[in-house]
Length: 396
Image (tube, rainbow, N blue to C red; front, side, top):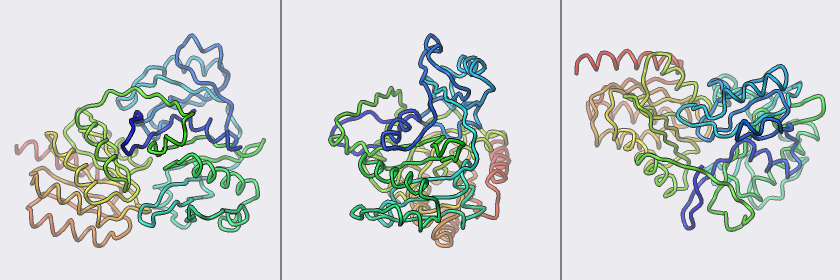
């Protein structure tokens, strides 16, 4: 959700309805829908599904920003509740009303850039509709990956054979790949891609555009309104200055620093922290295997606020290296030397090396750090942190 400015590296996240309009131009079916920006426009819309159009919030359903109603009249009443309401500090200025489709089976499809291998990867699963991070943790064998060189002329039969799918699904994946390639995307995600009674449809869509390629797409005119804090502006500059991976940051009013892996699991963790009685100082995530320096600068921004605790959390990463990213975190902690409790719950590539880096640095810099791997539920680690924060505040 970054405004276009010439000469700097940016990502622009599209609203769901914008993403659906884009992929439908590549012959990928989507549900019929209408976007509402004012209650006076309600007469234009028909449908039973109401979705707040949000750019910074994931897992909208858990926040009550997506509702499936019995009929169009109920949906219109729900729009009155959602329109202009704030969800995690983002106001729903637009609402999408869609038709309800009867889903027979759900798939997951994602295309993103693997910064470690420096090439795109198609990620596919025959289980969709749930957090891909959760699926990766519980059933890693259900997630299939196909790296594709930009110079390759990808064929439908290759996709069909790789993922053991029907012609129709393979055609959709090929169309999605062509969209990713021709539109200069950094992320294209359909979750779920659903089999319905009338064929396949992308029920929910997430798209991020490499806006540095805007000169090749003069027809684009996505407009964004931004009111950013100084820290939020600094993190955006951090993201622009280093193409490796993606970092995101949103200021909140609490006293517990929150540094999460990207994906829907981050919202689950935020919910867990709130349910445990914690008060987050920020919503922050990183993904796509960012560099050590990028994570270092992100962590420095988190630590620049008055904190009573820090939670470094995430499910099993697919691409992000634990050793590289944790080295960036430790570099910032070594400079700041906080006395408050720190809970780490991470897992993924080079996990053993990452944990060793954390343990050594914790001793060297006398940090109050507790480190967990995948054996510790993320939600339980939130409860442990909140209890430690309470004790720390009493001591202080």
